[in-house]
Amino acid sequence: MKQTTTSWGRTTLLAVTDDYRVAKVEVFPGKRQPFHRHIHADEIIIALTNGGVLVYDESDLEDVEEGSIKVIERPCWHRIKNDADWGVEFLEIHIGDIMPDDVECRT
Image (cartoon, rainbow, N blue to C red; front, side, top):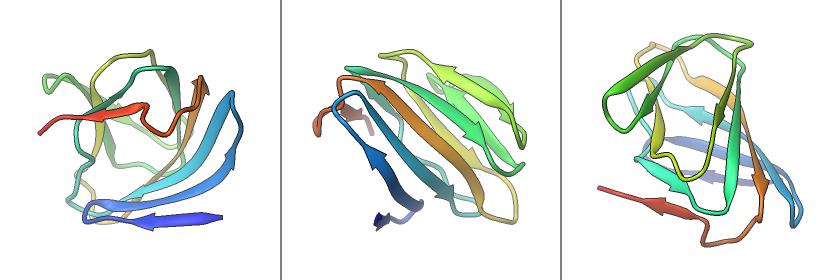
């Protein structure tokens, strides 16, 4: 399993094929992912803990509770932010053409 740590959290790659990618993601307390979108894949988020907020296009907010499932269709801009005092964890499943350059971030 490949693990990547950034200033906002940690991603552990669990499985990848040409058609899907599965990762466990933790967003650190008080942090947030950069706004990003996937050009060639839809994303399914399965919350493993409470405390996360799914943000669409900077204005549309949706609480992410443990066990909830969210579907983000391509190419929707989104990110998870963590307002909790603990790490927010979720499974991230990408379905579609899995390509290294599929993620586009904005500042």
